[in-house]
Length: 147
Image 1 (spheres, rainbow, N blue to C red):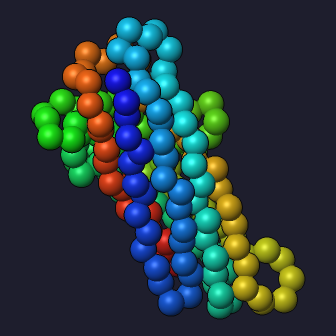
Image 2: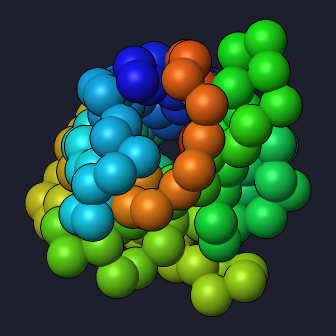
């Protein structure tokens, strides 16, 4: 079974911009007892003197919730459960501080006001033991920067 990458979209503001990488999990084996993991990045660049910014990630539009998020089969009705985490151990769900999720809190580096950026790793996991049909699965999430 091949799992296509899902896209994390971006939303830009006049003082900060956010860029993301798509996360591709590769092939999901329905018989495997181990999760399928992947990684990506969120990069925030602030061009003005933004002292603090919070980065949030939307719930899955397919499931309407954060845990679990669900990818939908292209041309089908199967759903594949996954999630996005802020830590490599995959214990802290990336979200908006509701439903047991956490956000990324950014602070301008010390020193004179100047443009600054920060790259953050994000970590995806498709949970094992899901009985889904062969096909491509995807979901679209939105990253938002609030300051």
